[in-house]
Amino acid sequence: MASLEFRGVSKSFRETPALRGLDLSIRSDEFFVLLGPTGAGKTTLLRCAAGLESLDEGEIRVGGNDISGLSPSARDMAFISQQYSLYPRYTVFDNMAFPLRAPSRRLPESEIRKRVTSAAELLSIAHLLDRRSDHLAGGEMQRVAIGRAIVRSPKAYLMDEPVSSLDAKLREKLRVELKALQRTAGITTLYVTHDQVEAMSLGDSVGVMRNGKLEQLGSPRDIYDRPANTFVAAFVGTPAINLLPVDVEDGALVGPGGAFRLQLNGDGAAIGDRRLLFLGLRPEDMALSRQEDASLPSGRIALVESLGMEDSVLVEMGGGVEMRALCSALHRFQPGENVRVGVDSKRWKLFDARTGKSLG
Ligand code: ADP
Ligand code: MG
Image 1 (cartoon, rainbow, N blue to C red):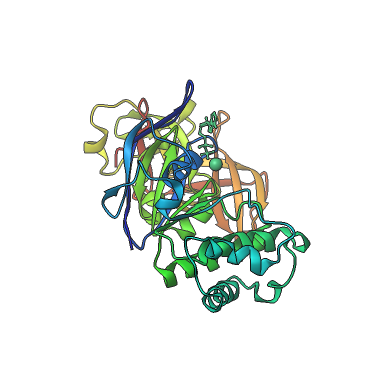
Image 2 (cartoon, rainbow, N blue to C red):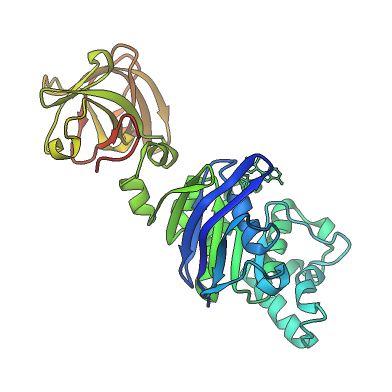
């Protein structure tokens, strides 16, 4: 198995920079997820790794060797793209067998059958092997496309939002399968998505990307609990983190227009002499209560959205400042109720107001 490394990788399309000196190391056997909004450069990075685009600067190493000069086929990477293209008149079997029948491979037909069958079983499409691929549903086609990529044992899997075109249920199922597949085969995987739930559930490590650069690298837990900046904090998590500008005054954080006041507790050193910060509060770290408690900020419930077991509750804190809290549905909070807002100072996140960088 081989590690996959990007060193100082840059790529522009005429005037548009897609990758800006990106560094990234993926260990062999690792399931690495690259998460970022549309336009971040994710597809470009995969296409560069696969050899479908050339680099302007930098190098890409597989198992320590620079592969920048190699043709796509010599790189031996399996690229699973968003737009799956199957041969419509071929059967599922023949579509999946196609890469194994390349003249350069010369595999015996019995070996081809063995590999296709086992990949098909893994992807729950064994019953479809004789069907023509233009007679399949969308989700089935995507499985075949994945199957075609995994019948051989490439140096790495490059997966570009492979499940994003499927419906939610299928997406979840296929995600589990892909993870299991990667575990079994132990093949280095670079998986790209704009979906943070997908990234958090799949990745051994996650890289958050924006504007052709990595914003943060870490375990899903790290990214969620210790976001490096306001961009990462806001991009990861549903409902999204509450991010509010606050003033530092007499050992307290004061919300816009005095909407709330939170006593500081041990953050002094990190804050230094800053007067302005961004305060990040995850909705699940806020406790709403009907009990009168003058030491806590107060607000009025503007909206309650049911998420099943939990309610997502929007609280108006005064002066147009709103915060979202996640509460057990058992509380049965109602719009118009006055509540106290409990905030755990150990869970809040502080960011520099100018750079957006975490002070944590
Ligand atoms: P992502 O996959 O994260 O959505 P892309 O890698 O597709 O991002 O695109 C990154 C940037 O590069 C975008 O600004 C996009 O418009 C631009 N780009 C990508 N491919 C091309 C291309 N073939 N020609 C011109 N611009 C491109
Ligand atoms: Mg893309």
